[in-house]
Amino acid sequence: MDSKQQVLLIEDDEHLRVMLLTALTEYGHKVTAAKTASAAFQIARESILNVILLDLGLPDFDGNQLIPMLKEISDAPIIVISARDKEAQKIAALDAGADDYLTKPFGVGELLARMRSALRRSLQIAQPVPSSRYICRALEIDIQKHQVLFAGELVHVTPVEFRLLTVLVRHTGKVMTHRQLLREVWGPNHEEDGHYLRIYMRQLRRKLELNPAEPQYLLTEPGVGYRLEFE
Ligand code: CA
Image 1 (tube, helix red, strand yellow):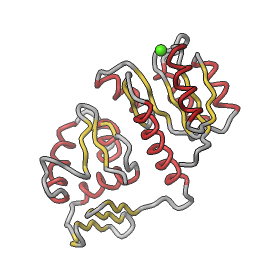
Image 2: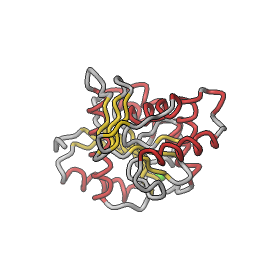
Image 3: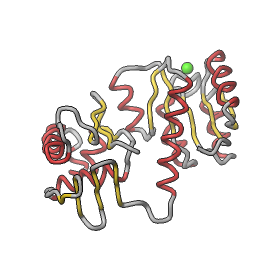
Image 4: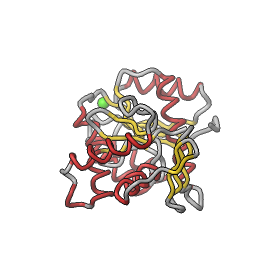
């Protein structure tokens, strides 16, 4: 990762804010810190940012309300940093448009790794021709050619399975919530039909994983959703 990333840190806890600001600056990042959602929004509107770190419990707005507002004015990936550790709370933030979610307390090393991953993804998305090809170890998915290969062998997938793979490839590495996947694959009227997803993921894992019980590519984010391994 380019060592000079523009980071917006939104955190009202003074101790944590100073600690993260110091640590990230030591790693070469250029960090602007904000204590409130409104100050953060102002900064985001006036700067070009590479990544946004967002605490949810803020004095003026809830972080979840701020996510869609930030997404409107900035392309920077948003990593939520929050003490809220319930699955429903993670889902709410991801559904609102957050790119990743880190539960407090966390180590700086883990935060840096998540930032690198979010930045790699956003760079990939920013390419003029978005990559329609996914290659990770034995698995290869070519969206344009409509082909799935495992260890070089063509794998037959049904149209719905392929649509599900397409959505995951477009968001490689990002956690997709059940609701987001259901909406994109089956449409907005099926957001509650979680069983569709379970059935199709099971089928896909049988086809694309050496051991479907311990998936290497189609990963479960317990209670939240699924993610296609990113490399
Ligand atoms: Ca807080």
